[in-house]
Amino acid sequence: MQETIGHSATGDLVINVGPQHPATHGVLHLVIHLQGETITKVEPHLGYIHRSIEKMCESLTYRQFIYVTSRMDYLSAHINNLACALCVEKGLGVEIPERAQVIRVLMSELTRIASHELWWGAMAMDLGAFTPFFHAFRERESINDIMEETCGARLTMNYMVPGGVMMDLHPNFQKRVKDFLQLYKSKIDEYDEMVTGNIIFQNRMKGVGYLSKEDAISFGCSGPTARASGVSCDVRKWYPYEIYSKLDFEEVIETGGDSLARYMVRIREMKESIRIVEQLIDAIPEGPFQAKTKAVLKLPKGEFYQQVETARGELGVYIVSEGGTTPYRIKFRSPGFSNLSALETMVKGSKIGDLVAAMGTLDLVIPDIDR
Amino acid sequence: MTEEVIAYLKEQLKEATWEEGTAWPTVALQPLLFKEQMQLLRSDGNLQFDYLFNETCIDWKTHLTMVYHLRSMQYKHQLVIKLAVDRNQPEVPTLSDVWQSANFLEREVYEMFGVNFIGHPDLRLLILPDGWEGKNPLRKDFEDPINMIRL
Image 1: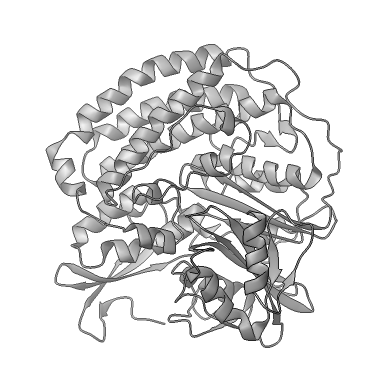
Image 2: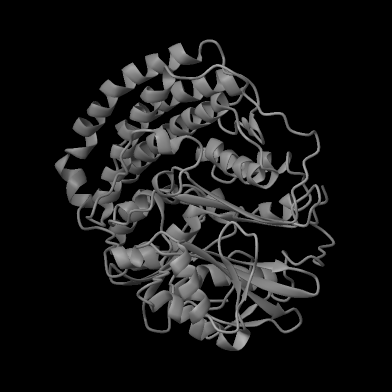
């Protein structure tokens, strides 16, 4: 066991951030070596809420295992379910009705807004601004209400099933989403006024937690974290699934590589998500919301991989099938795990106060890392 | 991936076995040539597989298989690399000096499957608690008398 308190062999002060710490957003444990106030080493200790989802999935059928994955990245539950459903569909070779595809994309983008919303509030709170948290949660609540009406749940929706979605949209859905968009578009400018333009905020973010483009690629970073370093890696653009190839949206890329760039990517991504929702909300085609599938699903022998873009980055589902009703081996390539591995490079040599700013913009969700 | 790149790969990766009928080109490498060929995939100007986004292991009960998913950020092509590993004495050269993402991914495979990565700078438990060594949860024959979940 390594020393986790006191002084290291080189005379650095060793302190623990977490597992119970408000800035780690869950039970992440970081052992930090300090020389004065300067960080010399960051060592993540994971596994405090590891539930062995991969092992569990080996004994669950292809219909059942999707529900477990809502608990990985609970802020992008829809998109997690979508990745699994798509992977199973790939193996089955099922054609998805267009209505289901549109509903799935709509739900994914609403989830992305809600997730970035929570990140925005929580990150501002990490830096000492309390008000944004309430603003963010107020808007997020409206999305949760829309979800609850259609899916029956607010966080772990379990709405995506192999072949489509579980049930049709609630009759109120379109009206409520439109109302929300109208309200939200005025709010997002308010966010800029409140936080983005704030000089204290800018000073805390600029140049902090710098990640170069080469490092971002080498560490396997994805999502807003990589795109803030100038890496073009949006799965929706490069390996489009569902109807993303037909939609008009921009891949948000910044080249700053620091915390402010990561912040700007997410703020701009919310606006892009609004654009996608606006394009689709009046164009939901009629028709069935689920393709006909067998009651017991059996995937052919082989390997299937599906990647999707969650709010945090690229989620990959890798299924190895032996031809039975349960997967032989399943692996989730979670975005947070790779993004976290870049943390040490980002904060080495900076002050301990900057650690929180850097970590806040990584947008870590611990169950996603631990799985 | 275009036909030319695949033809070029087949020329470059000697003694490799190509799998048929997979979604992405899949190739199994020989253990002795493994490290050298992986470095080639990373550095070759026509290939530039600079993004190792997934690395995992499969327990086939008779042997283990390491699976690497590679992507080129430049050309956006993808490749799956496989390597058969002895189950009783699993040893694989590390790739953490080629791709930095391999550092954490290999630590996860080390504790879950017991694969030893030769030359890894920091091969310690990452997820499992201290003192866990010796039992590998994701192997098929893993038994835990207390906490085993049977669904």
